[in-house]
Image (cartoon, rainbow, N blue to C red; front, side, top):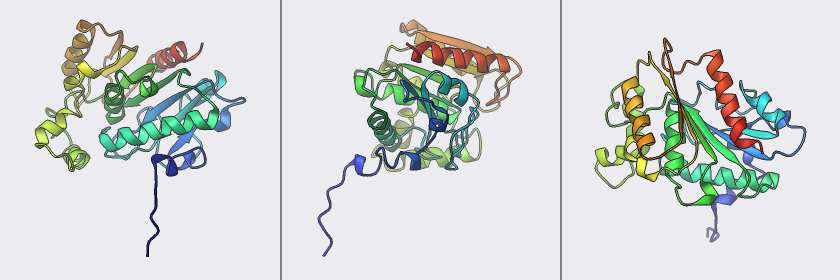
Length: 257
């Protein structure tokens, strides 16, 4: 007879198992971190911001600079087709809990969520999932070339429709309604009032730049604080050296006390 198991999220994701669910720059830290950054994956598991899902110490473009300031950077694994669906939100919540527990961080310790492409969409959607809940509301949010309207962009690339369908396949609602929950344009009212940095690649072949322009305008009309950079001649996922510096300063500015 099977034992009557009682399991919680912490039985899966905790300080001892953290390295199975994210890559971090902990090897670069010289003291316990005072803040942390969660970087979310793009479609397929990689990231235009430097991450990959092969389990290894994280040495991304920002990892060293963040470590110097006592900031843990974690590249998390919610799934390569997750689009920050309900399961991804739950997993990221568990990672936030595990990081705090492992490093002795309270809910008052600053932290940010960031990502590019699907990861940028995920950063916005994760922030929108916790408005009013201080335990899981990040201090700041950074999104590079996100898809802001999943309904409109379903067929923009061969792997997008199958990944979106997979992300919401178990949602008990019409597929169009389910995809609205993964579209930042439909979640504006859910966003917390934290600083946002959004980057738009103006030669993006997947997500029309004008959609991002309209989204940012809406955010500002709603009173959100948004720094918004439009990068000429950059295709989807590309960043200039100057923008990397801006991203670094945005994170440090909100995470270093």
